[in-house]
Length: 255
Image 1 (cartoon, rainbow, N blue to C red):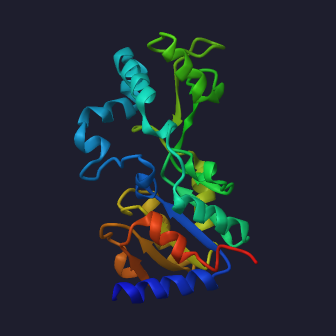
Image 2: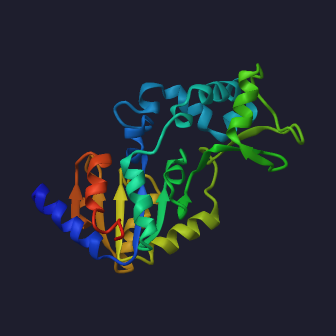
Image 3: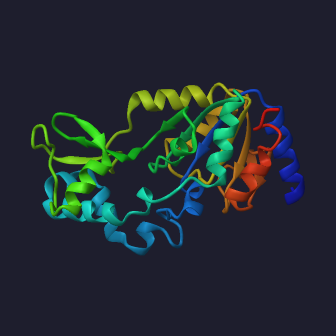
């Protein structure tokens, strides 16, 4: 399909849809200065050791890994990043009442900062911490302030347990209630729009065929090919932060 035809097809489908479910991945936030993980300039591509700080057993048993994880958070681009035009376009769409949900594998919280409220975070949120023992939670800024003050491995202020981000680590199961919410959103939409995801990591990737079986039409916006491209009514390869607002134009604003 020619690019201009793909755009026109996708635009018309989005304008006409009454219930849109959106699945977003790392490509959604690269324009906000947050690198992906597995791309050519991805975090794990450039620094394979970074994967250790995201592995549950390493984090819980090795103080050196925890110290490295906290140091990484002090310079992580997540905490200085701002939503880009693509995030804002989805927030505008929600205000029309036609957005069923945003399902995201991102942990940066930029959808919420842009104004979206119906966000299903498959992998948790890096902007909050949680105690592994007593389950107390709080804003990540609390822990980062302690790092800045000189602590290398801040513990829970309530029980002294191991503190961590509320993100899902390797070796850890996803929250069943979150998965149920994502499945419900994928199963109840006219259009299933994927943005900035390779559709290669499960269970997130399995949501697209689930939506198709429920009768939805799929649209894919991604820089590279995915294994599901041939199932989509249209595939768009333009820059996400510029093309998504145009795709949602007329359907994302009210008079």
